[in-house]
Length: 176
Image (cartoon, rainbow, N blue to C red; front, side, top):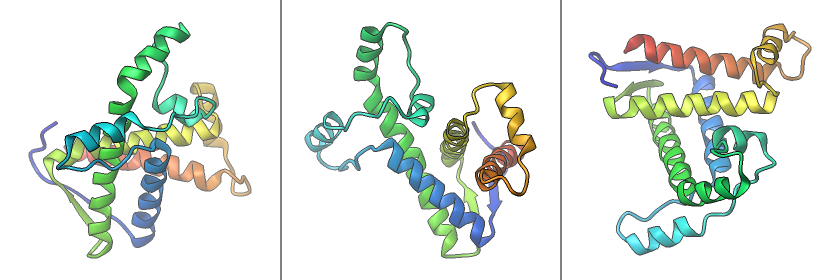
């Protein structure tokens, strides 16, 4: 995606803090190692020793869905692709976190470079997917429940974050 004008996001301090917290949680869930830039062998060892993802976690299943119904084929697919998928999600999330940390030290204005736009979109979408999984949203019918959450519902803050992340995605796309 190429933008014609810079995408600028303005955050309040609490918004940037919440988003940084969510992105940090995503990094923890993905569980990819930090790779050394200068040692290909160490990078290979780090990726080959990734801890397995918990398949009983609905967030993991939504972020890294099965490719095959057959368990053996799916296991082989995961073996071949999951390290790269996890490293890619981790890289995107760390880039977003770096951009936010830069904003936290300044005017809370994030100016997205062209090569940061796609990682931001992917990370914000991954956060929405993760929240939807935690809330049990699997289709349009269960998504409608999010519109009915009242002020006394304990899920209200999570639902608000879900909608706010959607708003951020819309803002970025509109500015493109």
